[in-house]
Image (cartoon, rainbow, N blue to C red; front, side, top):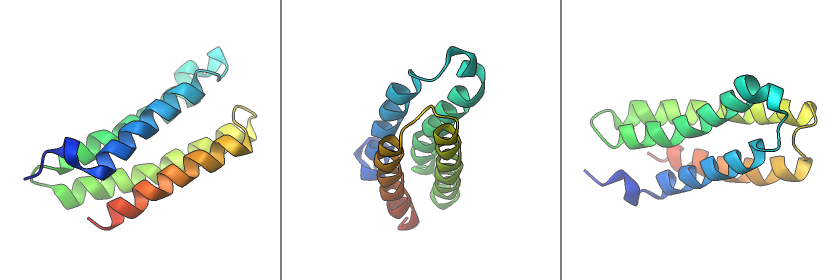
Amino acid sequence: MTDFKELEVWRKSKELVKDIYDLTKKFPKDELQGLTNQIRSNAISISSEIAKGNGKNMKEQFEIALSTTFALQSQLLLALDLGYLWNSDIEILTNKIEEIQKLLSKK
């Protein structure tokens, strides 16, 4: 069993969490318990499921992480529609998420 901290997909998902937190700091304060929390939670969940997947249920946990990437993308697009993010933000995040999705699909 490999240490999950050595997995490229985990490192990239951890970087994504930081990016998500940096961007969601700019969201309206009244969104803190709504969309902001949901976006942050899903970003954290991706890296957490990858870490859990390094144990006995690797395939199952990586599938959960993968499905969570799609939920996160949906929420980011909603944030764009609401004017909380710019197209350039979405493009950068989408590229990072798609890279994580490709790595998870290989597992």
